[in-house]
Image (cartoon, rainbow, N blue to C red; front, side, top):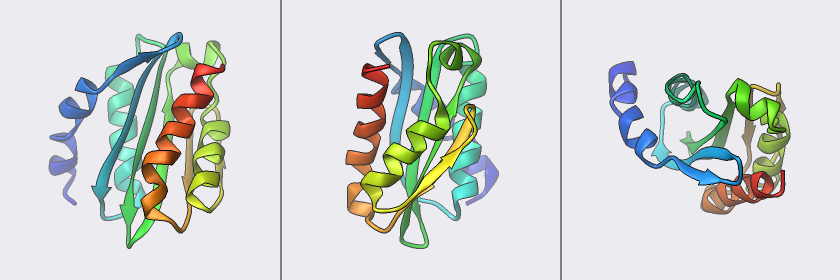
Length: 130
């Protein structure tokens, strides 16, 4: 994937932002990507555009046939209790793998690409109870 092709996907991802409790959430499956780094680039680009909000971004896709999810949080979301590492671990558990990271950016992966929609829903469910 070229960085320009990834950047062109950011507006469409922003259009999916929806309120979940006190958070603005973008939780999307973007399909096949070159590597988890592509997912990270998308997630951080979306986070930059939503920096003024309490936003949580969960971008999932497959790289080399394996599912991966990147969670990024804004400062407002972290202040409201969202922790990317905890959310990535929850999503990765659904994917049949593991994950974690810092409160602002984290990654998870697994072995079951078919579980990506359920993994994203697990992130949304965790935010509803935050």
